[in-house]
Length: 344
Image (tube, rainbow, N blue to C red):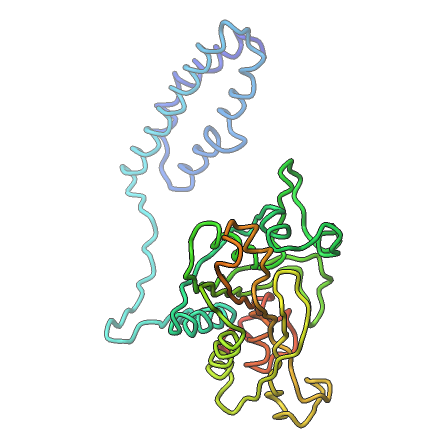
């Protein structure tokens, strides 16, 4: 349709629309006229589709004519609807008894891992510790070098650590131990701090492993701190979590950032030390690593040589929660199945 023909048709509609709408005598006819002009495939949709074919300098004028007439028809239809007494069908009345109790909403609750973290932190706070949090993106120095982990250590390999693409050699922290370095670099002893948080390692996911999990790092630094202070602190913690009848033992171990180092076992909470499938028939369950802070770590954070001693320990939150609640698959913590989560 060319420009002149389009203008002629618009003007023709404008001249006859008043009479056409005034002659409407029923609701059905009113709807038919509305569809004829304003429907998705109506006359005005057709007019609009022709506008791009009109010369550029005339498109604005045509657009104004179309929009003005479209608005006018809408007003005329509404006016004729009122004249005919066409009203919307009455809505169905809803019976409402305001004396009836409202619909209750389920009360939310904290995730079992959050509950475990809060419980553990509260135990150490009662012993005089403070709670600090560190970033999940760490420097290679804080995650490895500052903790006396040598360059050739396998944990530095890309197969064991998530490195980020950056010039600064940033990474997702593989343990919460960098919190040791950050706290000691920013404060002078005496220190008693726990650092909870998420950590990341490229492990294959199975019933006992995940690429993301939670740890709590603890450290105490002051003058004349002894290994007996470490043992006493951890004994109080273990009994607070698992009960006074739990047995506990220290086994010599090696960690680059502590010397001497030890792993801590507790008597199996399932079989009470008699031996079962959970503890591998040994009667003991390993729950955390610990030791006296290595002098080289003190040197990396700038503490004077020989001025301080201290101890550190690290434990897995999922490990503690699984033992405490009898959970056999770590994946349950992250699947968000309400049937599991609402049990805690």
